[in-house]
Image (cartoon, rainbow, N blue to C red):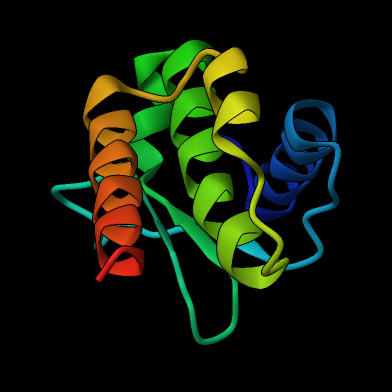
Length: 113
């Protein structure tokens, strides 16, 4: 089983290689997560990962980590990572792309009012 320290190091590596930005907070395994693979905490910026996701394989675990890092970099870094970077990274699903597209359409609509 991977330790919390090893998980934090893995997230730091994925953050730098995928987003070219550091992850400078703590990551923990949280057995209380039952219906989700991970969670980003807005209050202190740490990331919790469901320990059952480790058994699902490296690709699944990395996908969950990348998803949580989207929240982390979007909120913590306040700059946003850009939808092009997320799509090119290969883990951004269609539902989220549609939601962002809808949000941008709403913003354009309200600007015209």
